[in-house]
Amino acid sequence: MSARNDEQPWWLSSTCRTVDPELFFPARYNTPTGVTQAAQAVGICRYSCPVRTQCLTEALEAERGTVGRNGILGGHTPAERLAIDNGKQTSDLPAEHGTRQAWLFGCRCDDCAVIDAEQQKTDLHRMLAAVPAGTAHGSYAAYRRYGCRCEPCKGAAAAETWKAGNRRKVAA
Image (spheres, helix red, strand yellow):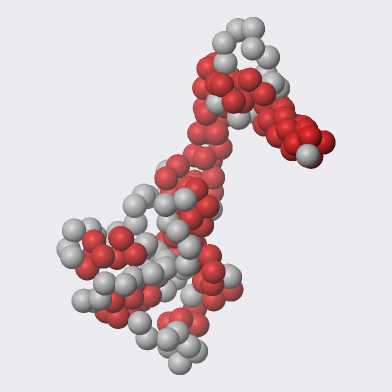
């Protein structure tokens, strides 16, 4: 791929120019950290970069016919760019504004924020309903066994993790 430098006028307007470049090159895409990192990078590209199309075009041209693809470029992962190059996928955005998926991909417009807030409330109600009667919220059991992620249950899980770490130190 050709080196990015200030001679490329489109790149001067890119959003990624002000972000740590490591974000766009996850070490592994199949780990939770890699997935999160890739999602953040894709979100920055797809929903806030004014030159995403030019970046994607350059990436596809540079990678055409090559096996090694790396990094998030033009708002797409290496696998997505390969699929675009092979004609199996379009380069359109995966979600429209005003959807939870767009929010998860990094869009921070007002419409997506409202949808995400509503979804979080729904998710919280679902988690609260999943914990059987007799199991207290704010307990490690509610967090671990029933998947409740309300703030009291998260706090209980953090406290339990801290206690377990201290028990290991004392035993050693």
